[in-house]
Image (cartoon, rainbow over all chains, first blue to last red; front, side, top):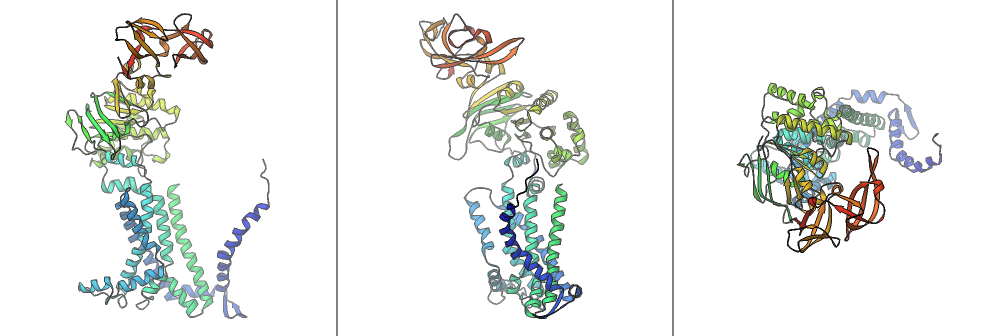
Length: 286
Length: 348
């Protein structure tokens, strides 16, 4: 049977196409448009081809921010994924306590990004912050506003505090969906500890971990608000990530052309990394 | 292998009603024992208590006379095959078979050798390096059975309705394979099922469980011919045993107001049970009203029908040549020697 053509169907999809166009395609194309022009004012613009791209890729400050960005994301994943799994395994599977644990875990996820930044900015202050003052009282020299290492540690702690819950909740859902028979079989087969985790739990967590890693990778690659509030990118440029450098360029200096080229590169980078990850997971599944 | 002895086993979840109520069960070394019962009979709870995954509220479990009160699931040397194939997804077939051995710190060479033996026995050798994803349900369940048999010191193999998930055509093959390894290895096996055919064909002895209580333990013939309880009589057989109201009067057993045979029991009401094959519709006997005549099968050119009739308010089934039965009033003759009598549900 020939599939019948019904052009009216396009009408039904039209609203979605319109929304997506205005929310994603039009802004993206605007940025692409800017990235190939040198703009002086509304009426004066010169087509410059790929010059901005070339310039951005040669900019040492861009490359440094990129390196920092990749390191930060890698550290975030290394810390949050195992910790999230560990927490998820520690939550009781059923009973009244479970709900309490889940609610406590969900709390950091409900706090706005900039508030998280403010909380940690105060919490980690060496003079009045609970954490900062406590660490200083122990005789450890700690100051996130002057030491790059301290700034990084504080940022990572903040991100772990803010987002490990997400990994833990996803993993908890994954663990809860394992049929009890697997645990029973493992108990009878004498599998405990690491072997139980490795051969029973981890294989069943594959799909949720894929989602957790993707979400955390994308999110941490785009991080802006928290370091902006906490350290302002400093000390020096030690915590200036791509998004913050980009904002300085576009909003602070009005370098719209280079900023647009930067944005496109940034977007492609995240897309590329996520695609590589996703493709490698899919290939192993096939 | 070990003999299993269970006595007075009682279990409840929380404060709810007892799931198992004073269960006694004895399984000899190398015996194939089936636990038969409908859903909610407590079969799975019994298995979990035997394997040590659950601890009973009271009662004892002993293997070879050794009390297992303080022995962990992993130390009981019990293996279990579940309703659906439980395989470790990251491992290939060989890895799955060797898993219990690797957990017990066997050497690589010893594991490979033992896995080879078990695979040979079950015909899994060509599959050894396959991923479990690539297996059919039958092959998966065979692998799960292999994993249960891999430990040479395994005391008891528990089977929890292992044929449920397999496609119908493979059920027979799987049952054959189970029978064969059981004979070759003389395994003590406890096979839990709600399917009487599986139980009757697999086991040397059957325990019928009903609402947490043991109704009867015996050979398949015992359960079929001499059910100890009305519930057993109804559950076993297809259709189940005919149960009709009867009365003992002046040393005579009467059904449907008609005297059937002499009876030594005290006067009073009772229930008479007989299998469909021990009765026939004809011109003499107890009057019944035939409700339906349904063709069953053709045996040697003769059509056999299942006749449904009513006696004293109870429905009975009789297998009968097609031509000999018709709707309406008829009479049924029962072989008196094959009657089983019940009072208050229990056999007299």
